[in-house]
Image (cartoon, rainbow, N blue to C red):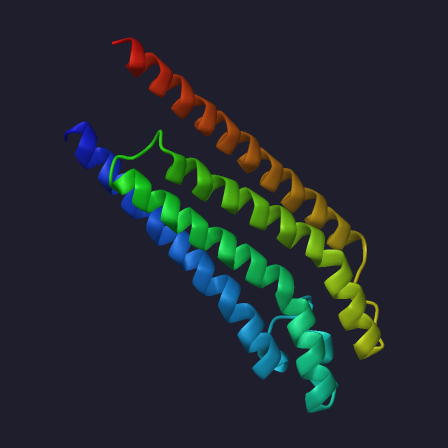
Length: 167
Protein backbone atom coordinates (compact mmCIF):
# COMPACT_ATOMS: atom_id res chain seq x y z
CA UNK A 1 0.00 0.00 0.00
CA UNK A 2 1.41 3.39 -0.94
CA UNK A 3 1.88 6.12 1.61
CA UNK A 4 -0.70 8.28 -0.16
CA UNK A 5 -3.30 5.51 -0.10
CA UNK A 6 -2.58 4.77 3.58
CA UNK A 7 -2.94 8.48 4.42
CA UNK A 8 -6.19 8.60 2.46
CA UNK A 9 -7.63 5.62 4.33
CA UNK A 10 -6.61 7.04 7.70
CA UNK A 11 -8.18 10.35 6.75
CA UNK A 12 -11.37 8.48 5.82
CA UNK A 13 -11.43 6.84 9.25
CA UNK A 14 -10.87 10.20 10.94
CA UNK A 15 -13.67 11.77 8.89
CA UNK A 16 -16.00 8.93 9.81
CA UNK A 17 -15.16 9.24 13.52
CA UNK A 18 -15.61 13.04 13.40
CA UNK A 19 -18.95 12.67 11.62
CA UNK A 20 -20.12 10.11 14.18
CA UNK A 21 -19.13 12.50 16.98
CA UNK A 22 -21.07 15.36 15.35
CA UNK A 23 -24.18 13.18 14.95
CA UNK A 24 -23.95 12.00 18.57
CA UNK A 25 -23.29 15.47 19.95
CA UNK A 26 -26.26 16.89 18.05
CA UNK A 27 -28.53 13.92 18.71
CA UNK A 28 -28.23 13.92 22.49
CA UNK A 29 -29.51 17.51 22.93
CA UNK A 30 -32.27 16.98 20.36
CA UNK A 31 -33.45 13.90 22.19
CA UNK A 32 -32.90 15.66 25.51
CA UNK A 33 -35.19 18.51 24.51
CA UNK A 34 -37.81 16.44 22.66
CA UNK A 35 -38.00 13.37 24.92
CA UNK A 36 -35.73 13.64 27.97
CA UNK A 37 -37.46 10.74 29.69
CA UNK A 38 -36.02 8.48 26.98
CA UNK A 39 -32.46 9.20 28.04
CA UNK A 40 -30.38 7.18 30.45
CA UNK A 41 -30.36 8.11 34.12
CA UNK A 42 -27.51 10.45 34.93
CA UNK A 43 -27.66 12.54 31.78
CA UNK A 44 -28.33 16.21 32.50
CA UNK A 45 -31.43 16.36 30.31
CA UNK A 46 -33.26 13.69 32.29
CA UNK A 47 -34.19 15.88 35.32
CA UNK A 48 -35.91 18.47 33.10
CA UNK A 49 -38.39 15.89 31.75
CA UNK A 50 -41.08 16.85 34.26
CA UNK A 51 -40.97 20.57 33.48
CA UNK A 52 -43.67 22.32 31.44
CA UNK A 53 -42.82 22.76 27.74
CA UNK A 54 -41.49 26.35 27.94
CA UNK A 55 -39.07 25.91 30.85
CA UNK A 56 -38.08 22.46 29.54
CA UNK A 57 -37.17 24.00 26.17
CA UNK A 58 -35.18 26.81 27.81
CA UNK A 59 -33.35 24.43 30.16
CA UNK A 60 -32.73 22.03 27.28
CA UNK A 61 -31.26 24.78 25.11
CA UNK A 62 -28.97 25.85 27.94
CA UNK A 63 -27.86 22.26 28.46
CA UNK A 64 -27.29 21.90 24.70
CA UNK A 65 -24.74 24.74 24.47
CA UNK A 66 -21.64 22.67 25.34
CA UNK A 67 -22.84 19.87 23.03
CA UNK A 68 -23.24 22.34 20.15
CA UNK A 69 -19.78 23.83 20.70
CA UNK A 70 -18.21 20.36 20.79
CA UNK A 71 -20.14 19.32 17.65
CA UNK A 72 -18.82 22.39 15.83
CA UNK A 73 -15.33 21.41 16.99
CA UNK A 74 -15.68 17.92 15.57
CA UNK A 75 -16.97 19.45 12.33
CA UNK A 76 -13.64 21.31 12.24
CA UNK A 77 -11.89 17.97 12.78
CA UNK A 78 -13.82 16.67 9.76
CA UNK A 79 -12.36 19.62 7.82
CA UNK A 80 -8.87 18.77 9.06
CA UNK A 81 -9.37 15.20 7.83
CA UNK A 82 -10.34 16.60 4.43
CA UNK A 83 -7.00 18.43 4.36
CA UNK A 84 -5.26 15.13 5.18
CA UNK A 85 -7.25 13.44 2.42
CA UNK A 86 -5.82 15.98 -0.01
CA UNK A 87 -2.31 15.45 1.48
CA UNK A 88 -2.33 19.09 2.66
CA UNK A 89 -0.79 18.47 6.05
CA UNK A 90 1.57 21.39 6.61
CA UNK A 91 -0.85 24.07 5.46
CA UNK A 92 -2.52 27.08 7.00
CA UNK A 93 -5.91 25.44 6.43
CA UNK A 94 -4.91 22.32 8.38
CA UNK A 95 -3.52 24.34 11.29
CA UNK A 96 -6.63 26.56 11.28
CA UNK A 97 -8.94 23.53 11.41
CA UNK A 98 -7.04 22.13 14.40
CA UNK A 99 -7.02 25.52 16.11
CA UNK A 100 -10.78 25.73 15.58
CA UNK A 101 -11.22 22.23 17.05
CA UNK A 102 -9.15 23.11 20.13
CA UNK A 103 -10.90 26.44 20.64
CA UNK A 104 -14.37 24.92 20.37
CA UNK A 105 -13.52 22.03 22.71
CA UNK A 106 -12.20 24.55 25.22
CA UNK A 107 -15.36 26.63 24.78
CA UNK A 108 -17.54 23.53 25.28
CA UNK A 109 -15.69 22.71 28.49
CA UNK A 110 -16.02 26.25 29.81
CA UNK A 111 -19.73 26.39 28.89
CA UNK A 112 -20.49 23.22 30.85
CA UNK A 113 -20.67 24.61 34.42
CA UNK A 114 -22.69 27.77 33.67
CA UNK A 115 -25.10 25.93 31.38
CA UNK A 116 -25.70 23.29 34.07
CA UNK A 117 -26.13 25.91 36.80
CA UNK A 118 -28.58 27.96 34.72
CA UNK A 119 -30.59 24.91 33.64
CA UNK A 120 -30.59 23.65 37.22
CA UNK A 121 -31.92 26.99 38.41
CA UNK A 122 -34.78 26.77 35.88
CA UNK A 123 -35.51 23.16 36.84
CA UNK A 124 -35.13 23.84 40.56
CA UNK A 125 -32.60 21.01 40.75
CA UNK A 126 -28.85 20.88 41.29
CA UNK A 127 -27.46 19.85 37.89
CA UNK A 128 -23.88 20.86 38.59
CA UNK A 129 -21.59 18.90 40.85
CA UNK A 130 -18.10 17.41 41.05
CA UNK A 131 -18.64 15.43 37.86
CA UNK A 132 -19.27 18.64 35.93
CA UNK A 133 -16.03 20.13 37.23
CA UNK A 134 -14.13 16.99 36.30
CA UNK A 135 -15.67 17.05 32.81
CA UNK A 136 -14.78 20.72 32.48
CA UNK A 137 -11.18 20.10 33.53
CA UNK A 138 -10.77 17.14 31.17
CA UNK A 139 -12.40 18.95 28.26
CA UNK A 140 -10.37 22.09 28.84
CA UNK A 141 -7.14 20.08 29.05
CA UNK A 142 -7.93 18.28 25.80
CA UNK A 143 -8.82 21.56 24.08
CA UNK A 144 -5.53 23.11 25.24
CA UNK A 145 -3.55 20.10 23.99
CA UNK A 146 -5.20 20.39 20.57
CA UNK A 147 -4.45 24.13 20.52
CA UNK A 148 -0.80 23.38 21.32
CA UNK A 149 -0.68 20.79 18.53
CA UNK A 150 -2.22 23.33 16.12
CA UNK A 151 0.51 25.82 17.08
CA UNK A 152 3.17 23.17 16.45
CA UNK A 153 1.63 22.37 13.06
CA UNK A 154 1.54 26.07 12.13
CA UNK A 155 5.18 26.47 13.12
CA UNK A 156 6.13 23.33 11.17
CA UNK A 157 4.40 24.81 8.13
CA UNK A 158 6.35 28.04 8.56
CA UNK A 159 9.66 26.19 8.89
CA UNK A 160 8.87 24.03 5.85
CA UNK A 161 8.13 27.15 3.77
CA UNK A 162 11.30 28.82 5.01
CA UNK A 163 13.39 25.74 4.15
CA UNK A 164 11.78 25.47 0.72
CA UNK A 165 12.85 29.06 0.02
CA UNK A 166 16.51 28.04 0.40
CA UNK A 167 16.28 25.30 -2.18
